[in-house]
Amino acid sequence: MIEVKCLKSIEPALQLNEFWLRDHCRCEKCYNTDTKQRKFSLLDLPDDVSAEIVITREDEQNLFVKWNDGHESTYSFEFLKSCQLENYLKAKDSSEKILWDSSVIAKNNYADVKLSDLIRREDDVCEVVGSLWYYGIALVEEVPANQTMTEMAIRRVFPVMKTFFGEMYTFSDANDLAVHADTAYTKEYIGPHTDNTYFCDAAGLQILHCIHHEGTGGENFFVDGFKVATELKRINPKAFDILTKVLVPAEYIEEGQFHVHHGPIIRTNPITGEIIQIRLNIYDRAALNTLAQSEMKAFYQSLKEFLRLVEKTENQWTMKLNPGTVVMYDNWRILHARRAYTGNRTMTGCYVQRADFLSKARVLGIID
Image (cartoon, rainbow, N blue to C red):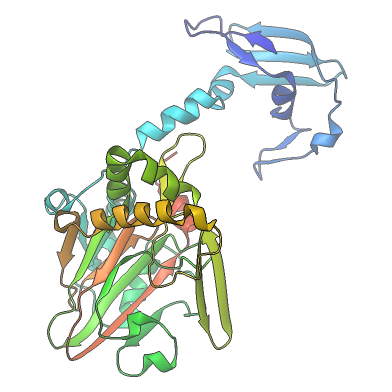
């Protein structure tokens, strides 16, 4: 370890591992500034790498290091500080999400923009992406009720994710069970859930647009899974802990498709402990074979406790999706559901990769 300090700063000195410091050399031999990629293998660095000369250059706010193998590196203190664990932990606080129940979200702080404005103005794009990050949901209004215009609204902000459902999909209750074996293609009640629990990497966003409905019912409702999980952690830490550790298997089976994935219902960041994904779908659960029978009781009690919070009326925000309104929501956070309905209903929509959502949020400066 070496200790370095910026001479013009009152901040404490940095304690830096020498191998880490050498690994982060940004000279032209080690780093391609055009591609933002390293140019060497860790095996190229000597095991006994050490700094022979360390000089703090007061005027340039830089650190100069000459290594025992003759290599020379120069680092800015700003770069070195930005790479420390403490800075990573602080970054979490700067992009804190807004947890909500029905009373909070009804205050209409989420994005609700017109398609014409979304097309014309970058500010509206930023508003939509910001709303998806902070609230997990956003609306686009006055969208002509067809797949083509819905796709135009989506692609204004994000690329579309391709799955075995296709890219853009349009489905109804008429005969689509013959196409995909999914409860969504019925008129039945569907409880709060997230999609793609059977995928290794569930879609980051889901977008839906009801382009036709002749009948009654069919109201959609949404639950902030992060808010509910946070509430569970407060009132029953043991149940929360169990749901972050048990790998629950999910599956999707139809002719030509057999998807299986195992993951916790509540996924947390192993460094910060913050909740990063809810993976809950009671319909797609496969046989639970990842837990000893002696531990089943505690798991089911924990899951039921979580489901009771999800089902609390005050945690559910209900809206009727009518032609013209496109809803976007975070599939890693927001549980969505639908009341049973009568008549005929047609929906169109798509998924968006998590990586594409987060990339857009970084480009717009919403998150680091």
